[in-house]
Amino acid sequence: KLKLILTIQNLNKATLQLRKGIVVVGQVDLTIGQAFDNMLITAIDRLLVRNRIDRLSLNSLEIQGKLRPEAVSSMVLKTIKTAVKI
Image (tube, rainbow, N blue to C red; front, top):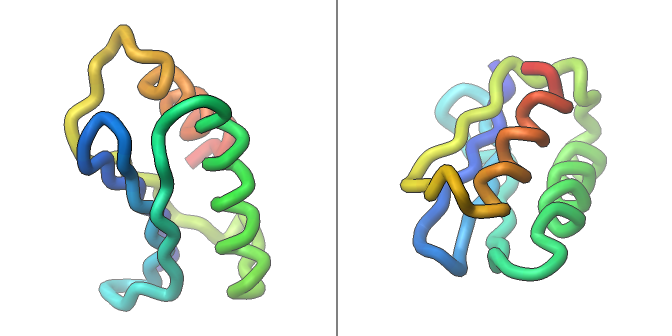
């Protein structure tokens, strides 16, 4: 199973991992701030292209860590999860 896991570490840092089962296939560290939405979308695209994986092959997208519901980054993450349609 292919899975994207986005882990929010604190208000400024996040890690995006692409996993096949329990094996980490790729990982990107992100800074949460201005243009986080573009940075996240680009990071997802690069991880998938680098590993020659079609978006439709993804089985799940998990968001881990604490999110403030009123934060824009929280809204961005929920929108991306909906857009990926997993």
